[in-house]
Image (cartoon, rainbow, N blue to C red; front, side):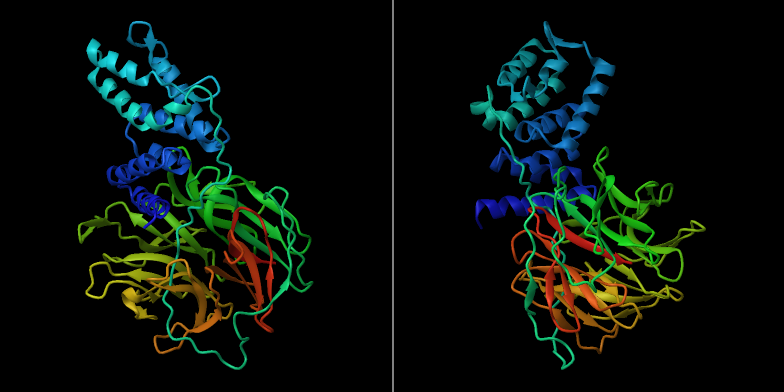
Length: 500
């Protein structure tokens, strides 16, 4: 494995551990990342989220800002830490003539102070606060690779490394039928390249492709895998971002007036369910005050004001499996009118990507029985009234499913899938929620195709693909097999919902 691939794998594993609350384990991986690549902006940012003290967070964020002075999230968090330090101990000296404020990682324009090692030694010799000395020694070690350029250096890292976690699904036997186009379909539209989201313009699309697509789209300024939530108007080409929101998995309500999403909370390095109207004038956090943490991947019901999602019940214990602690995410519904929370699963399996049927009676989700004899991700159908489960796919550890969606009539589900040894090569499938049904491939390409989203009339299918570089949004006309590239920016674009 190349060093770059090793770094990306360490980052991925560390991010998963951090999101599961395993900070000590995550910290070891992020420290390894920064040792392998001392200018890895994302590694330093994530390390800041798992270290236990404000002093260490300042060290990590200082390195982030040294690498990329334009990282807005790091700037905001550093300002908060500085304000707190100023209020609590602004003038405290750790030894004569040296204050805590002077022990930050950057001075003037952001150059890292090489004298940290000297200060650390003086702290130890003077006997002033052994814990502070240990902290600064750690900071010295992590900053050592930067000292050669510490006096005057301006390193820019505008092109952030994408952190979108690869989703997956099994690739069961696929059978093309006469009424389906032969795949991969022919490209029939050429988009106009655009440098940034702010100046992006939608590619020319046929006049009968209408409505609005909500997406996680744009630059990952915080380097944590959460993007601006953006609404693309297919009617007039306008693009509007929901202000001050970073998230993923956005979906429209049935009437298209509200948007739900997994919301990233930069102040606490955590995430949960958020909701806003389409104009972003009333954003709020859902599940507040409930015994849940890390709620995510929302799915609206079309018939009632109900939302399905997965979350960690605060009373549940981690599952110890093969030396790993696994958080058992469970499936819930929330009535947004009555605030009634209902738990639909209660076992040690891990659930993800729930999708509630249009009539609210059934939920499909990916279930991984990590302790089972045949562990692996598979799709299950949950009856909301009886809570009984029916296996829809049974390929166990051979394939991984993700990004489940119902068709408008509730008779079939669409999802992304890839063989377990072919991560990063998802195809898109459709099948009835029946274990005896044969999945049909509707999008197949050598690239990674994921996040399928149907148009309100079911004719068009939007999806994300990296077939031309970054992930862009493409639209398949299912009646004739034509594919249109909707976006073309240097950043990633992942569709989540489609409304009129």
